[in-house]
Image 1 (cartoon, rainbow, N blue to C red):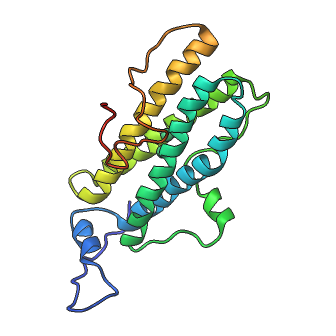
Image 2 (cartoon, protein in one colour; image 1 turned 90 degrees about the vertical axis):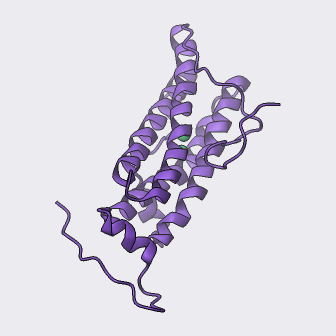
Image 3 (cartoon, rainbow, N blue to C red; image 1 turned 60 degrees about the vertical axis):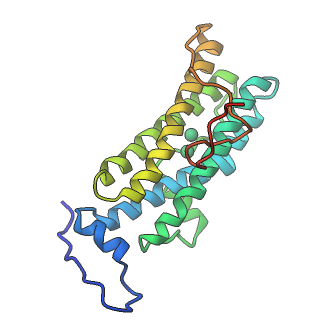
Length: 206
Ligand SMILES: [Fe+2]
Ligand SMILES: [Fe+2]
């Protein structure tokens, strides 16, 4: 059980308190816990987009179709990182100063290159990574629904794309591993990393 927090009244001109934080605390959000969860999610997005997905994608050599989908997922995770980091600071939190400490707080297991790095093994790793992201972002949605509209909006935009990413990798893995057709149902993105939800870009509809 989180400790019951007293609701602070923000004094005139006070820059050490935030009305934007106190109003959500008053509605029942455990702000300190939320900041921790957002840092863990940001670490997972950062590590996956800038590092692990980059490596995994490199090893899909020869599968240009898979690489294209992987690139969309990789760049959209970058958009997720960019989208959520400002919210951590608005809530009064901050990113760990130490990169290694930050990496170690990630809410999802590192998506390292599997051994052996076969296409099936890589697609499986990518799929499970998207599933972790869905679980992590819906936890933020649950925690903020009806209480913190701003964090909820950001998290639900990200969740929309993570759910699409899972569908993409189910389609690719089912095809590659089982010779089965399980369509993701998605249309192509307008450009790599289009991120219609997290970049508030219009859907690809030429
Ligand atoms: Fe993501
Ligand atoms: Fe993703």
